[in-house]
Structures are given as structure tokens and as C-alpha cells.
Image: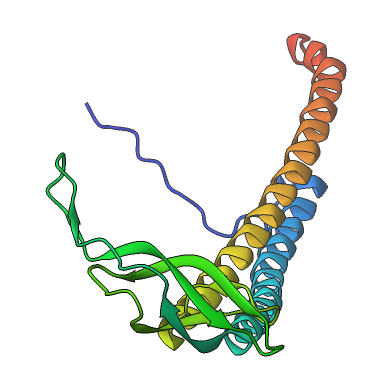
Length: 195
């Protein structure tokens, strides 16, 4: 027995064909427009988001300032987590510093374990004088910008493709309903003899 071979005809919606319906042409144009909009829109949205995130990251990095502080009390020695066996070289301890306005402040921050009381440490403050973590590296900033832009572009492209698919499903449903009406009208005539 010979297996029936299926031939896939590519680009059938774009070729002239007596069986091609108007809805097939409309669907082909929607597919083309959807993919074009998804690519162009995704790139545009990704670029805008990447630029916005880059501006925010650069502003955040520029706002952080190193400040000399003094340990109020000695920091505890390194601790080891019994469950995992991980040794923590940084601990939380209280430090004192003078902000740009001359106000003496104290707060807790992460320092090297075992740092003695009265030792000088460098802490980072924001524009308002509050303690913050150190600025992120240039590589980490670039990674954040790239991931945010790529993620936003991908989400935008997928949303456009989903919207195009919904429009295509609606067109297919209308074409199927129209085909059913034509079948109801023409189907009974096929049973009659014409000779």
C-alpha cells in the first residue's frame, strides 16, 4: 500500500487561486502586518525602555557618595551557618559619620567581620544623607539595561502577535460561518440529477 503524500504549498495565500477566498487574502495581510508591527514595535519599545532604565541607573550611580565613617562598636567575628556551612565575612554593625550638612548620624550597615571599634570604614550615602549600598558596577548596569530593554521588547512583540492572532481567529470564524451559509444553500442541489 502506498502512503498518501501531503504536499505543503507555501505562500498559498499570496498566489492566484480560484479556491482562495477574500478572507484568505485579508488574513495574509494581517499576518504580514502583525509580524512587521511586532518586530518594529518590539525594537522601538525595547530601545525606549532601555534608555529610560539607563537614565535611572546612571542617576542612581551618580547620586551615591562614599563617606568616611567610624565604627561605634566592634563588629562580631565571621559567622558560619550551621545548616549550610557557609561562612559570612560581612556582618551588620553600627557606624557614625557626618553628612554634608554637618549633622552627625549613626546607623547600621554591612562591614567586614571583626572590624574593631573606632576603625575607619567607608560607607555610601544617597543625596539625602541616608546609608545605601555601594553603586553597581558598569557591567551590572549594562546587564540591567540590556535585560530591561530586551524584556520589554519581547513582551511588546508578544502582545502584538497575540492581538494579531485574535483578529485572525475572528476572520476565520466569520469565513467559516459564511461557508456554512453557502453550504446550506448549495448542498441540497448536489443531490439532484441534472440530466
